[in-house]
Amino acid sequence: MQNGEVVGKKFEVRLSQGWKQYTGLHKKRSRREQGQFIAEGMRFCREALDSGWPVAAAFAGEGFAISDKWEPWESELMAREIPITIISDANLRRLSQTEHPQGLVLIMEIPPRNILPAASGSPELVIALDGVRDPGNLGTLIRIADWYGAAALLLSQDCVDPFNDKVLRSSMGSIFRVPVLEGDFFQSLGEYAAAGFQLWATVVDGTEILDEVAPEGPVVLLLGGETSGLSAEVLAMAHRSVRIRGYGAAESLNVAVAGAVCAERLALQIHNMKQK
Image (cartoon, rainbow, N blue to C red; front, side):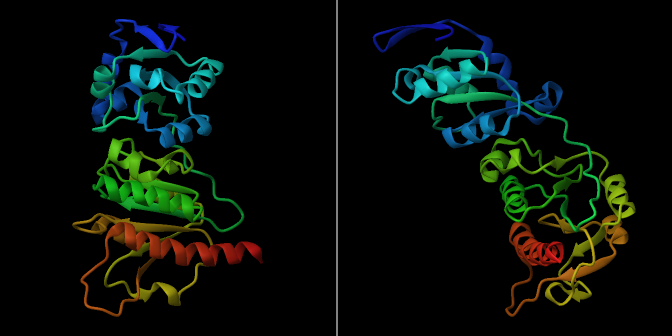
């Protein structure tokens, strides 16, 4: 074991303060400046390692490091030559962003994510989010994009940070499988349109009902934020405005729910088009 000596299920924890440099990753500004984020939880760390994304460091709490669960993690981390530090459980709680950490924290490198995928010869679905600020909604939409096979998720500058801890937990690991693209939102939409994508805006009073129209090629599905919906600038760029058929009296749907309904309709149609 690096940074500790195992002696009959006990070890001495090195008085390392290296973990402190990563507590700044609790904030968006530091995540952007350092190009890193915190991954934690057994399932999420498993997804992180399986993704192939670079890992800068691993920290294990002393309680976890004397448990039977630690050995396979330690073996894998050492095989990957990822630096391991055993720290006190109290310090792990300070590094963690959850109330009850599970014992392992990985410091992940954020790979470049601002390259737009090229339009292929077959239809594709891209989801573009304008002003989605709720972490739970964004994480769920990343998961939805993964489930329905979206080629990418495009975020406007005023969306919540996709590496926010609540977003990561809500994504359930899908953040590692779906390209989440940031940058100049309007320029990116223009580039998609120039590449042959149709921009479909989802609005409550859309001129067409979603399940009555069919895509003729690749589509960028535009979804607006929780409070104000799509901006006028985005609506002006859209080729079509669509709405979800409703039968009750609710004023609107949650953006993640609306995203799931729209993605299901479009993904089915695009899948069928690809089979022809």
